[in-house]
Image (cartoon, rainbow, N blue to C red; front, side, top):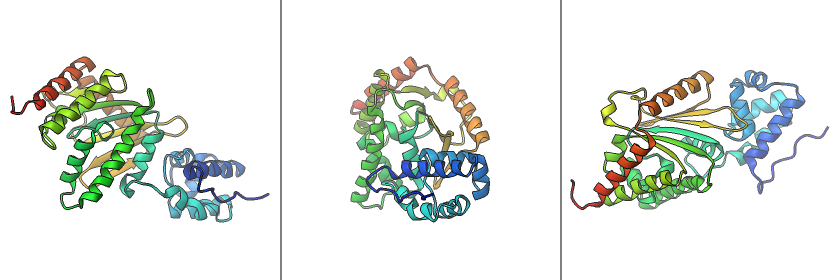
Length: 279
């Protein structure tokens, strides 16, 4: 029987690589969990490779070729599927976002990346890396704005964002930038494109005091959780962790202001920022 052909670079490499992995696994009569055990990853990770929501790494590609007897196919082709326009630490997250059917996110200090304006993103990146050349900053902003185009689709993905009040009141980039950024969030909420809630200062402590979280769900792959802190970012698929994070998000949503009150607060703050002086 002929083995799989090398990938066509003009097609979607990650989707094709995932499809070939699924076919090769099924030919061997292995479940995702069984294959994962043989290559030292979880079954859900295999499912994400097959669905194209995770990138294949070189050591995994060689193990897959050995176990599935695919004649070096995955070792030859994993680089085509690993290419990304995003920085290595964030590539899997950005590309998972693009395939997610639902994204639930809590941000304690910033407006979420998918809801940012270009000027706000530019100011954030300047604060992150003040010595980075302007042209590199512009590349980062362009990449972030490309991510926001996910919301051009009228319904997919479902995006449910819980924003801490601190993210709305921390002035980044100046008052005009903040006014534009909050009006953009309000516009998305008005159009019914996002579910947006604000977690107010008046609520006191809450279940996510340790930091930001993002939960992504997919049609044909297990969910993923992304945690982000200062120089500490990780993407996880452990079912127990996913379940715990889902519970944390539910608690946050229950503690946050209702959607109408959240929208009113965002619009009021945008109006305040639009004035030249602090109220």
